[in-house]
Image (tube, rainbow, N blue to C red; front, top):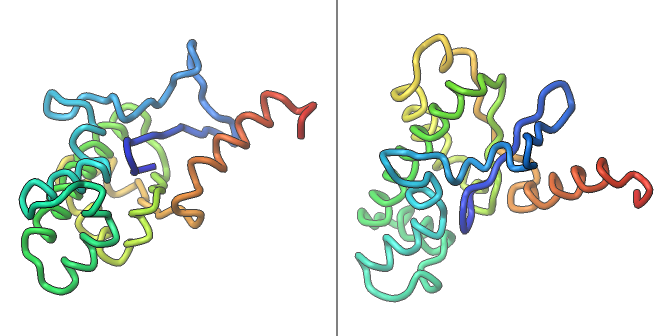
Length: 165
């Protein structure tokens, strides 16, 4: 899930991988180019980057505004989106080297921009991966978009506390 930070989980045969301290797949902290993944590719970083270039605050430069500006021909917004996609592809490749999933599902509000994001993310993923992994790994966009992470957290909670379901 890409938003203020980057979150994730790994599901194998219908079961969530928790890890020893229940912190498996804290993907936002994965080192990418010597920096935490989420400090390079979260939506909050996209907003801060565009605000620094164009003026204003990150709160004013929401993902929606950035994508609207890019669609209207704003090259600075388009370049910021392309940079984010490049880093997302690189981070996804790193995760796939470790986890080797069949499918990577991308969620978060910004992922509603699938038509804009799919191709550059897939291209960057393939560039930073190897054919064996890239050719066998699908990248999908969560049908629940921004609610995907919260719904996943709820399912995990209810699985751990069935008496509350």
